[in-house]
Image (tube, rainbow, N blue to C red; front, side, top):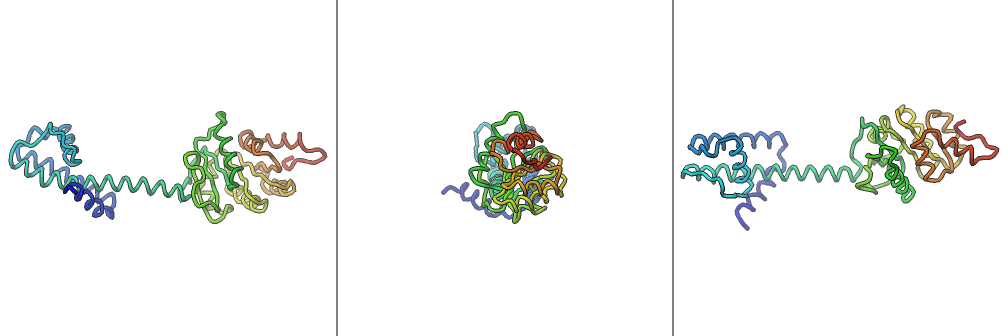
Length: 275
């Protein structure tokens, strides 16, 4: 194993605990002293700003194209000991820390620990019912008339994002938790779909969503029309539907009021819950 590889591994473990501020300061100090050292040793051909940055990066990253090199003996010793070894340690630490931060952010998102508080113009799907919920997301993504660049799945039973690459994921202890709904960005969402395994949970969630005064359109699906009517009486600004196909539910979220028309067409002798 080469000395450079050993140095990279050692530097990565040594600086892994460093904060970004300390690492940036150390890198800045090393960069400055490397430049001043070359000026002091008379390596003028390496001190032009663009040339120095190019030389510094190719040297400290051990690329070493060979097109630029110190000409004096003192310059060679200085570059070999201070510039090269110190730069390898610091830049390796910076690269490793950046990679670690990206991976941590990805894992955080997969486990539902992200935060969309203050987000606006997105879609929130509250509750997860397996294939049915997957169908809802696919329909949202297929419709080019609506802006579904960001879909946030909000659930308390999933362990990780069921549809990475297509939707984000927020996990909490209860779907009716205000903290969870705020993390999903419900107040600023363009549309919110509530579809849970039970009408009782849907009702509790609807009441919690209503308390947040969302600016977007909210559609909640119930199995029983009586509970849908009850939800409408407590949250009249929300669209509470019952016994609708998934395609109709998605359309209701995109076209406010369409569920009322659908219910009027399908129900005979019954008063739709939102009328």
